[in-house]
Image 1 (cartoon, rainbow, N blue to C red):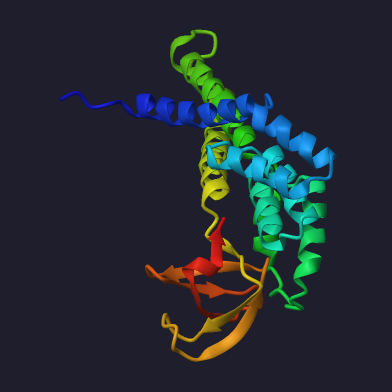
Image 2: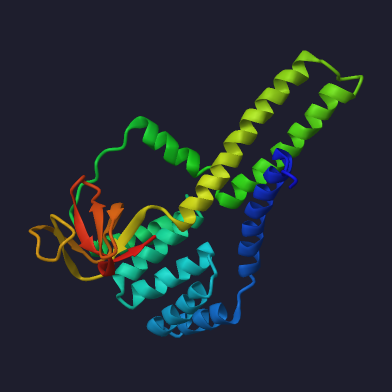
Length: 259
């Protein structure tokens, strides 16, 4: 059996990332359901518009603009949980977008949870800023460009007499290699984050958080529709969640929608 070389495997991973970006671009050609949803939204039939957008999402489309429009329609039809969920999904796919962030903030005002988030450490703030430098497709495209620059530098360093063995080119190869590793790692990270962030949104009006994964266990505190929680652990029926202020407990799976 022939073993794939590391270069072939690397090309395969890069191709998968670019395919995801291409599918997103194709999805932006406004399928009929998207156009119909926009028409219904303009006619102020917000619930019907949200249904059209959701049908498109359920069929496999994962595009920031689609989730953004769905969030607006859910917000206008007073479905706060789905509005927050949709805006969060849009932001995962297109980090740093001001319009999405503003509408998410508006939706979160309805939650009125009065929970103070734990302050971010300096490296956590730096990490968030670094993530917002590009979206997943941007990191993927950057890694492709850097890969070919690195390949050209390697060929020049070893095989072109004019550049062979030059110290400056060697340092350039090192810098490009480090940038490539960073970009490629971020492309994978952002792609995974867009489809599995490890968080969830509360979907029911008021949900009591339990001390154990048992409906008969002690009530610890309450959460409201639209609140974002972090998933720490899960069974078939319950999820262990953590709030932004550090409180932890167990919630029924049916009360949550994972991001």
